Each structure stands twice: as C-alpha cells, then as structure tokens.
Image (cartoon, rainbow, N blue to C red):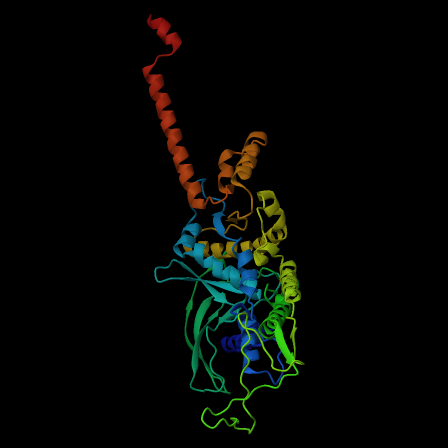
Length: 473
C-alpha cells in the first residue's frame, strides 16, 4: 500500500496531470472555436490561395456538441423524506445557484472533451455554492478511476504560470477530503509552490469526509478513459474543410468559361503624341487589354483568326463530396442528418421521432452518467444543509423528444385509466412541466379538495338527512 501524498506532492502531481492532457484538450478547444488545422496548400501558394484556405473552414463542431446538450436539462429532484408537492432543500439550493442555466455549460464541457467538473463549497452565509470547472483547469486523482464517484483529491489551476517567466505567479486550489487549500505556483524552470491558506470544508456523506469535486464523464470506459464528441470527429472535419477549399479554388479560378483567340497578334499601347510603342519595366511592349463581356463582340482583322472557349469546371462533384462528409459526421456522432443538412420537408411527428431515434438513444446514455453526477452534487448540497444522504435519490430530466402533445397526453391518460397509475404521478411527465409547476398544481389540488370538503360539511349541516327530516315531520 502506497503512503498518502503530502500537500506539495499532490500539487506537483496535479500540475503534471494538467500539463499531460493540455495539448489534447487545447486542440479540442481550438476546433470548437473554429481554429482548425488549415487544408493542404502548395508551398508556392499565392495570397489568393491562402485567403481561400481561411474561408474554407466550415465549423460543424459546435453543432455536434449543442445538439445532444440541448436535449438534456435537469428539471427536478426526488428523494425520500420529502412530502409530495414540497420542494426539497437540495433543490432550493439548486435554484439559488442558478443551475437551471449553468448546467448547460457543464454538459457541453463534458460532451466536448469527455470531462468536466463541478466543485461544491460553502459561501459566506454557509449555504451550498456550486461552480463548473473545465477539464483544462482541473486534475482529479481517483483510487479507482472508473468506479469512484468522488476523487481522493483534486487540484484546480484556472491559469498555468508562464514557464519562461519566474516572476509569473498563478493561484489555484487543492481540494482534499477535509480541506480546501489555496496555493501559489510560480513560473520559470524551477517552479516554486507556496501554500497560502487552508480551511476545512466539513462536507461528509454518511459521516465520511469526502472531496467536494464531482466528475461529469458522459462516455467513460472500464479503465477510466474518457472520450468526447469532438476528438473522433476531427479527421472528418478536416476532410470537409479540404473539400470546401477545393470547391472554392475551382469556383474562383475555373467556374466560368474562358474565351480563347488563335492567330491574332495583340495590338500594343502607343504614345498618343509620338505614336511609338510603350514598353513596360522589363522592356516588353504593353498590349491593349481585350474587353470581353456579354455585351461586346470580338472582331479580328485577320481572316485566319479563330475564336473558341474553354468550358467551366463542374462544381456538382465538390458539393456532393461536402454533403457526403457531413453525412459521415452525422452518422459517426449519432446526429440526425437533417440537423446538419437542413433537408427536412413536412415531416410528421412520427417520422421526426424515427429520424432522431439514434440521437435519443445517445442522449439517454449520457443522461444515465450525467444524472448520477448531478445526484452527487445535490447530495453534497444536502450534506452542507444537514440533510440525510439518500443513495436512491433521483434527478428528473425534461422531456425533449419529438412527440406531439396530443400523443403524450393520450398515453398518460391511458396509463391512469388502464394501469391505475395515480394521475398526480403523471404531472411531471408532461413535456415542458417543471418541478415548480408540479408543486403549484399539488397546492391548488389540496386547496380544491379543502374547499370541496368544506362545502360538503356545510351542506350536511344545513340540509338534514332524509331520516331526520321524517322524524321532524
């Protein structure tokens, strides 16, 4: 059994871990932001070629990340001990942290690079405070990289110090199962580490102190390796960019007819006063440009002059190749092709659901992994708030599947009538309904029931029963 690391050793190993994956993560970040490796161009390429190479970048990467991310949104949280219709303290902390909107950045970071993090701490008032962190800025060490929900320790460095500047100092935080430690790391060849301060965070689950850093890894294997959406698509993206570049070159230099003239000597520019031929700086006579457009005729003095033309380069093959590359992106990433190509004409709800079936399965798989991570974040919220840990607690996801509202309501109604499922249990399954809506509906239903019971009691008090009425008569 290895000895536990001290603070300096954890910081050193954390810095090495961040640096080891920096090149790969930086490349993924570049491609998402549209800074792709340029298409192939000859070494003697002119300024026009280089300009076309810049314009050839067609960035599909953000759409590959946004498409599954837009289909995932945590909309509620259920755990034992919370009466029906009431909001749990953990979910109130979720709302206080504005996580309805901030969860999107965490999802997209995890989908893009395969990994993102959320740190949980106490704010100045002792309330839970959650913050998403990019995988480029944090390294977490796990005893079991594939199976552990929480790391043993983690190092966050929002900025790395300049390796060539010994005066450059970057601040970071070391998270352990007991404390959060602020550290300073200097640049230069001989980097120095200074521990500024540390404070216990006091976060425990079932009485066991834990490191308050939660990993979001939508696609992780049994060895703890992660794969994002972007990296496998980079070769296909480069092929699409190359094809677009070839299209632009053909469009710029060969997409129009070229008129030719054979057997005609050009006329040269002459000095209007002397009539002598004007020569350029290389001693060659300057020809008079031939103006050829749709409104002009070409006329030659020599009867043997022949006019002809070279046909333009067909562009259809380039367009087909671009479409094929985009379809490859769609197939490998499980993105519906019509999302990328826009080729959708009056599809019914059933046809749209069938076209999006592959993406729906991928999103469901992502939700299994990401949902466990959000449940751990909410469990840490509860630990700070003094709530008991419920390992069976579940987050609920908003429904974004392509179904008509009439189909959904009809299916829910049949579940209530034929399977005897309580009607109130179906409220949260209506598309677009949030946990707050369910809470308000439950309150309204209770008020309606109270009014109905009150009306019944008043009626019974004012109107005597039939037997009582006969006795009174």
